[in-house]
Length: 361
Image 1: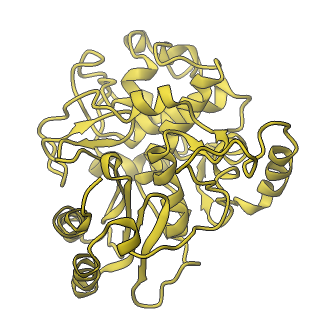
Image 2: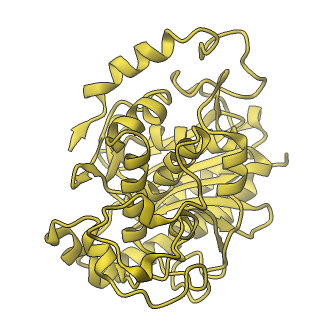
């Protein structure tokens, strides 16, 4: 693991030295906050949120007993920030599969640079010794949408994969059981192949690319990202404070902008956070919903975009309401059924209490 702050100071200095790209400059768009700056606080009333409804959500989170943090932002302002137990704004949380959406954003940045394309064949970016003829039709797009056709089980493959010491080879050794694009299979293996591809397309160091182009410009300097085979784990392993999780969600709501800077193109945000496939048969809390590029798209009214991690780690965005909710929990890998249940309870709290407390666009 390597702390973000070990290399971010240089990245921030370089960013500040780019003419015309000053994040605090006069080109800031109305309503587009500079995410490298500290969060600004507001009140629920000022941002069109019913304070009683929001208070009920906070009380309910406390009663659940496993929630560690609940943050709510609207219009780019924090209107609620509650921590439970001994946690606080400096606590670094394991965000689990929220990491996948960050990997998807990094793919988008490489695409924006012209270094990569979603229609590129996977085999053109991965070690020749690991690929086989049956991998030939798998494109970057299929990895993004979890439709590569490569067999995978989060329950059965994660531990042997990590213990194998072969971050790419183990995944590619799994059988190809479906034509690319035909079958959704939730796979941290697919996500890590994306991480390896981003690294290959951007100079060989995926963590440096993430720090210099995304995490640093967002002001995310506390935490770390576990690496596997020298590259960030594409599907999990990212750790950061809740306020920094919120920066990721607000970046999406701002369609890739932070102040006057464009970190990720609007085109990519619109494409990646649109429903690309309908998973079907998922036994998770978002069963029946859609999936974009490494992110869930909920067909609620209003529509939601959801980064979700094991045990109930959420960055929940409602673009129509300019609303963003972050929640973190305690979790247990020894009791996965319990962790799945608490994920559902927390999702219900966000859907049934936090979102309805908003009084309108």
